[in-house]
Length: 244
Image (tube, rainbow, N blue to C red; front, side, top):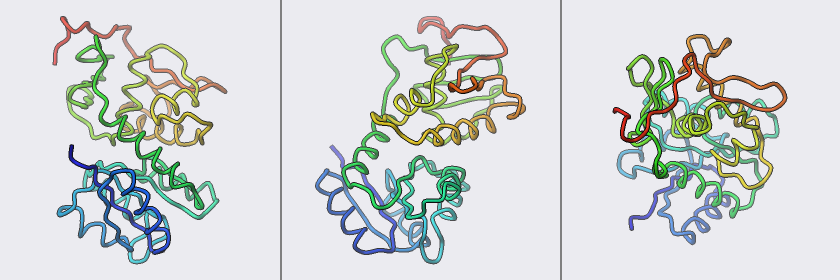
């Protein structure tokens, strides 16, 4: 089986070497670069399946790299590394397209666990008996194609945004706590930072709602979490009835 490729972007050689050593032990193919501009030089020849990206970098910082990758519609999963404790820096990473973040110092094993969780979620196939389509008013979600349409037109979602939306579709009408979403979408089996959920919900609303401040689909349940509803009470079609 082909090894997954991981690109490490960090200007501290000791950290890069530590991460590289542990990821190679875990069976990944790894390349390291030490500034933001070098990411774009390696994208085509290396084609990483995931990027571990430091926030503070020379030439282009992690936020700029994230923003440019998403501007190019590159959906490669990104785990942001930061030595900064300021919440605004972490949220800025998520706002610009990072899928997850970790604060230095961190355990290499925890990083590997988070990488494995991302790969499990992005490669998961529809479950047995899952509808071919989920259709709620203007919104259509195609699990097998990993495609989302609004009014019949495809929209661009990051892998994590798609997984979050699909998880909400699979539990339509149920109130899901932020911790349940962390477990179901990020595969965290420990108490995680629920702001990750809030930022990704905000991004989803910007893309699928007519008015993100007055959502039709993803409804906030105060002091609890979120639920997916819709302007029409339409149940997902059965596999035999659904259309693609």
